[in-house]
Amino acid sequence: MKHCPRCATLLSTREFEGRERLACPAEGCGFVFYDNPLPVVAAIVEHPDGVILVRNHGWPEKMFGLVTGFLEKGESPEAATLRELREELGLAGEIVRLVGVYPFEQRNEVIIAYHVRASGAVQLGEEIAQYKFISREKLRPWPFGTGLAVSDWLAQK
Image 1 (tube, rainbow, N blue to C red):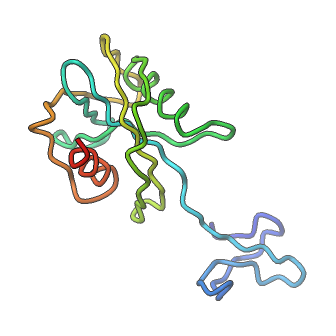
Image 2 (cartoon, rainbow, N blue to C red; image 1 turned 90 degrees about the horizontal axis):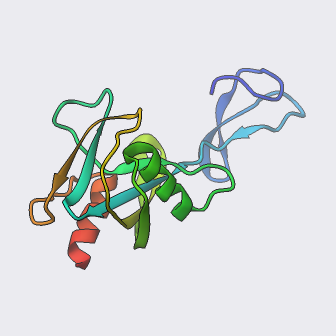
């Protein structure tokens, strides 16, 4: 964000509530851009054939991760997780439990991760280029984002 959405003045950086924030310098406007993290849901999908990992379009060929998506207005995190599972893999599922909540500072997101059980035939949605099943024993967490949830999930079983 470069300009104030209220008055179109160029925003400038200033200290506000103990943090550096973009704020409108126009007298009487008072707009402050908080740039709060976006809530994202993630599903560790346990399927009879293994844990499902997905590769989004545009990701490197060998990069796979969890089913994820943004929480929509008026939607619970659990409902969002099951919606993303339907949209991305064409599967119905059930929430087993909350795995945890994780900061993903590189993308300014907060990840709410769930363990989900699903079954049936996968039907890829438009965002997903590829999927694979991996056994729990071969699943290796990555050191950021949803990988932290995978690490906790593996440790909790």
